[in-house]
Amino acid sequence: MDDEKPITEQAMETITTAVETTKDAAVTAVKQVKKAAKKVAKKVAPKKAAKKKAKKAAKKTTKKAAKKSSKKAAKKAAKKAGKSKKKAKKAKR
Image 1: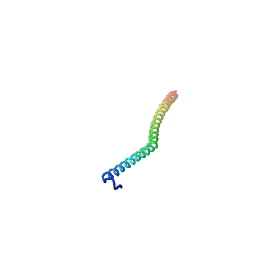
Image 2: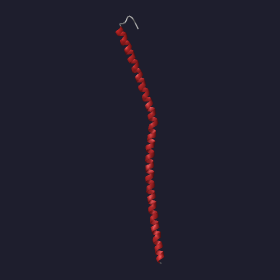
Image 3: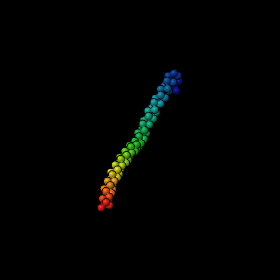
Image 4: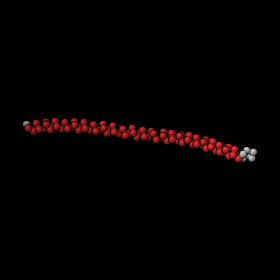
């Protein structure tokens, strides 16, 4: 510290320097946090999207499978009914 400058002026300079240093450190910290957040978002976001897509795909396949199985069951029932009618007619003869 200079002995020529008044104590108040020296104190103000010290405080100003400390404030500027703190400000710079805060700005740097914010930038680093933003960078880290972006990295995490890049890693997490695709996984969430993939999970949603997988769920949608699973729902679609279950719906399709249900429709197919119900159609097959209806066809089989119709065939069985036709066969049983034929057998009944043959039995009557």
